[in-house]
Length: 303
Image 1 (cartoon, rainbow, N blue to C red):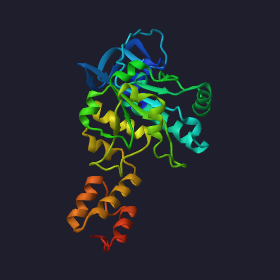
Image 2 (spheres, rainbow, N blue to C red; image 1 turned 135 degrees about the vertical axis):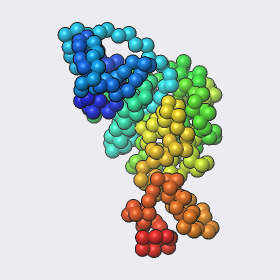
Image 3 (tube, helix red, strand yellow; image 1 turned 90 degrees about the vertical axis):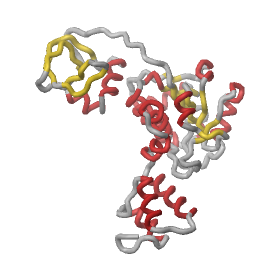
């Protein structure tokens, strides 16, 4: 494998996805390479010295090796955009960016076939093409959620009545996420409305809320971040708390820091240090320092 492909696509799994999509080919031919990693006892080689190989991956070649890979259908991430017409132009742009970024997250672990976008109509597809051009993907774009997906599914809702746990994530096949962007208009309760519009209560689909130590504050809201959290727990063995913190934006971390500090009666330097370590923050960050100074917790460079 030429090293430029790894750099361009960001990793081994992303290169494999491009082979499945037909953009890259598995070619027959002699090459020499240096083993980078072993996958199922088969070394993946770079193109610099080392061992001899009889096939390679590239954009084109004289002899293509045909493959018939059977990819798992599950886990399945379903993003339903049925309410897309309610969004402002800016929110629609944000929604489409989040869909593209969600696909990138899926490609880090699985492939395009594990992502489905539902609630689609011709107008939305035209809008999507306007933003993305002729994107090469095997994502399923459907008008409604396939009934087969509802046999083992949950819907993420920040106000759901069931708390999402690692056990639930590992046992469920389908995760339904509302394609809702509220960057310009507050849309509290819209996920519940979407849940009802989709008739998910008829299938006893639980509405699950994602929390950090039982609290919503600091939990990422962007669709791609939610997909990333679920994938890290389901496919990479992360615990849920670490996955949430790894996906927090700086704003998420600052919001949670403010919330934690406001809940404390007595604050000492050890407590502050532990909070910053937990959230992956440092007192030398300007925004963190501003929070600590407002609360009288930072004097000079120490607290």
